[in-house]
Length: 374
Image 1 (cartoon, rainbow, N blue to C red):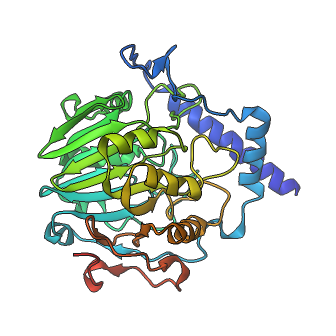
Image 2: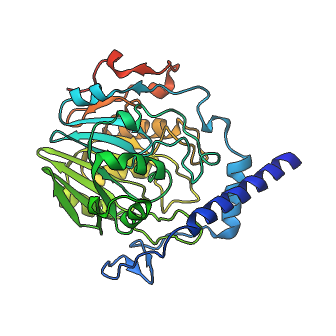
Image 3: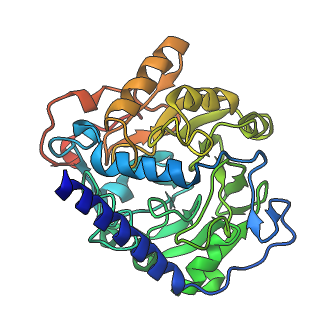
């Protein structure tokens, strides 16, 4: 017990030092007085979020360090379908590839679009500490084709990967971000001409694809002193006859109904389903709420994201898949949960196979697998 306590305190101190050192290097945050969400130097949710407080925060940290369930991480590598540059170029328009966590590669209007690209080993400011990946990315950044645009939901480490952004910059034409997140990219060296920042309900059309930043209920920050100085958002993506909704990270709120009224119905919703807990209900959804969010935005097919890559909560790693599968079946909701690296057709994705229940195979090339969808 003494060793465990010492380990917990040391790890907690290292986390605090890492965040403090990383944040100390950041310039003064930008101001956005034109935004209705920006009040008193901080961005706000429409409804105030519940605060944990120091005592509750310490309890949660204690459980993370010393009371994690044994199955919070997979006991062996999960199946990943390896992708190649050739696979992506050959994919038909209207394809989506799940690369992990909330990282999706979409092929629309003959161009590639990437959501929340995270390719690093850990979702952390340093690669020797913090949540570690369950699986390698299905494809390396070097192997990716030219990317027309990167769409970012917010600046947390499991959604905004500093190393990945720097590696992607030479092959990306546009970075679309909520307010303030784009300033981070520019600070990192991304050319300002490539960066566009949006408040909620603002957007842009690029190469025939429309993108609209829509509300979410979450928070932001990458250090100890920069909380909520950047905005968070969900995204609406519209291309010809296809409509996709990407929730980013969010708690359940009335904004989903407003999004559905303005932009629904959606062919496919990419809805956060994972890293939930009763102690943070305002910023991450339970699976029941994820399903309701899908219904609120008027989705046809639901693809649960924010799972299967990092250990960010206290539930078993398979639990989000299991719970959303049971709930969707009970409500008659079409659910697709592809393997990492699997291609699906956005308009007609395959129904889930329950791959997380099966004995895991070694990583295999995507070419050796049958294509999903049309």
